Image 1 (cartoon, one colour):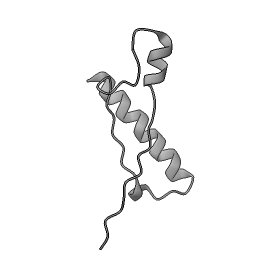
Image 2 (tube, helix red, strand yellow):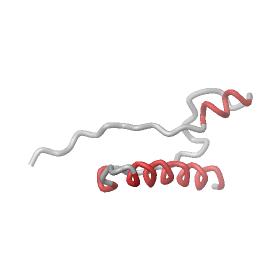
Image 3 (spheres, rainbow, N blue to C red):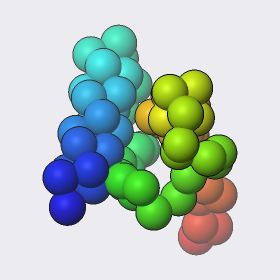
Length: 64
């Protein structure tokens, strides 16, 4: 749970910085995954550093 909370805080920090730079916060959603979605092995310092990341996913807006 600690790592999930830390991951959520990291994602929210990125959103807060983007909002401070003028991007509409309503256009973004933060989600932390903790250790649940690694991109590489967590057994080395390099692997752990690679897994501490923020990803941006573009979502299509619904057509009304």
